Image (cartoon, rainbow, N blue to C red; front, side):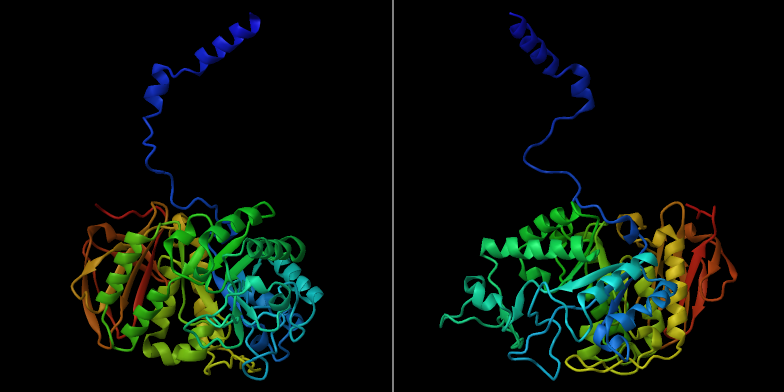
Length: 468
């Protein structure tokens, strides 16, 4: 009897009350209307910039030990995340060039002896952590070297052509690698285990995942959850699918941004192309997705030319735009030295380090980004609000304002001087000019003069709010 009374009492307590109905509107079970981005970005990524480090070319020695000596400089430059290009042993069978591509992985648990030992890499990561830096490593999950032992040990893990033979990824010239078959469940377990080992045993803080779209999203989703049980990680996908941001990746490549700004710099498009990019970006990508913006990386540097060849007179404006726009900025090693050459990909070709104004520009930009919450990454930063002007084909202008901090940017992306009038009473107020450090007061609907390929970035003073 007592048990029956307790059961009835439990049922009564579980019944919804009028108050419950008022507090919780009926749920439409047809749709999951929760937030699109379900993962939590690591706290240290909120204002971070990424530095891509090509160990082979970064120092004359081309080793982890030599690169470790440069970590204080990278910290002082203002980057937070150091991305090491692949650290694994490189395949010899069908190798390209004298030293081969680092994306031809012969052993997922190994370290390329060209760069040093596993202990050297651990020391590099430990030193980075001491300096407040975080290290992610390149991960190639789509293919392996032809002489990776898995080819013989697990032949069913590899894709087969019509003749029943392993093959490179289709429609590519990647003849030095062989395609994995992600329909094999055992491959999922192996890859997740080895990636977890790199986080738990080696100490890496995440991964940049090569051609991430060639691997099932379900794998990345499950992997992220598993890695988070070890520690917070940062995941960068070399891909551009919004769905990757839901549960797996913090950041994806904004190739479209690069291509758009590059075409404008080359005179092949005007500013309207950048309007189209941001229209599509805001309409199809969640605010909490970090899109990686860059004016160079190892692909662009190797195949399309240096930053100077790609952007010419527009380079400084392109760099500034890559940091103050919505997105997470990337700097490729050597950019800060004004590297004037394309770095070889399959052989040694050390960077010619020298003092260059670009380094100071990046340093000041990263100081601005860290100190101004409107410029932070993902949903922690402010959206980009268009500021219309009377030279829309040449001048790109916007405001980022989160109620605490604000930044107004105007970029003349043309080879002609422009006197431009902006339409926006909300811009009125006091600002600090990023370039000069001087104080600027904007009236309602202000106008400015902009030299060819120049910019104005104005940082709102604390407590200053525009007029409605």
